Amino acid sequence: MKKLKDINNILILGSGTLGLRVGLASALNGYKVVIYDIDEKAFASAKKIHQQLLKILTKAGTYTLEQADLAIQNIRFTTNAKAAAKNADLLSESVTENLDIKKKVWQQFGALCPKKTIFTTNTSSLLPSLYAAETGRPEHFCAFHFHDVFYANVVDIMPNPKTESWMMPLLQDFGKSIQQTPVIVKKESPAYIFNAMLIALIGAAGALVTFDIGSIEDVDRSWMGNFKMSRGPFGIIDEIGLDTAWHVTSPNKDEKSKRFAALLKTYIDQGKLGRKTGEGFYVYPNPRFMEEDFI
Ligand SMILES: NC(=O)c1ccc[n+]([C@@H]2O[C@H](COP(=O)([O-])OP(=O)(O)OC[C@H]3O[C@@H](n4cnc5c(N)ncnc54)[C@H](O)[C@@H]3O)[C@@H](O)[C@H]2O)c1
Image (tube, rainbow, N blue to C red):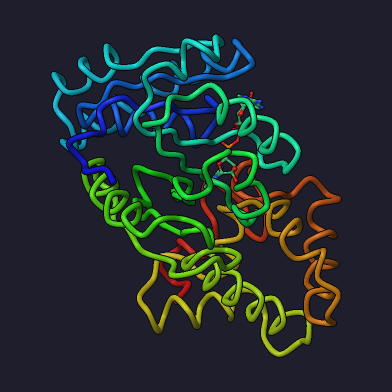
């Protein structure tokens, strides 16, 4: 059984979108961080994004310039798996969302890491028990799922059936120590807590449009006007990416999902994937829902 004081060295697997953020948040809060990736090219891009994030975070006063400097000194990048694993207290895995890749990487690091290392995975859509056995220590393995780390700073803690109970309070403490709001998902459940609610909201919004009950703008208008939110479900899908929404929706074979996937596909086929391509349901950088007279 471990306590927060036993956690000093953090190993991040995967230097992509999420790995670089979890690594930076850990380093900013005083942990020594090693970021491992198989692709050396990922490091240059991670370093660049670190600088951009630090600029935003120090400008906003979230962290000081001294903390930012220290964070950069606290992070080491490597493609050497053995060296990366050597002294890890907590491993946070953010490799590509693919079951075969996850299984391979956990077999590798399950064997390389010392006994003291506790294991966490950041998977969004796979149930951790699908690869818990590969870790070699399912009792010390738990999902620790971030959202975007700095803006959306909620972290889901979800045990697999074999996770020992002391892991949850430890991960709650660790999450708080890197400025996250931890929430416990009591048992394995697809999409954790927030994503499960979000998928239901987006599915309902899609059905209202595809069954011709309301227009895209009126669905968003209703949500925004009632909750005083800055965007509605379709504005949210534009942020997430219509392609990602399609990947989540298209495997489902019920009528609502089929219709919604078909709607998304008409936009995707025109290259309209949301904010990232300049257009989705709305046109950016000045989407209609941000205009004063929208509500
Ligand atoms: N992107 C998000 O918004 C988001 C949010 C929450 C959770 N996640 C989860 O985080 C994980 C990573 O997602 P991402 O968006 O950062 O992906 P990404 O594609 O940006 O990065 C993945 C990284 O993993 C590396 N990688 C692949 N195989 C590897 C291996 N065998 N060993 C080490 N590194 C390897 C790749 O080179 C790449 O740099 C996924 O499980 C995803 O579901 C993503």
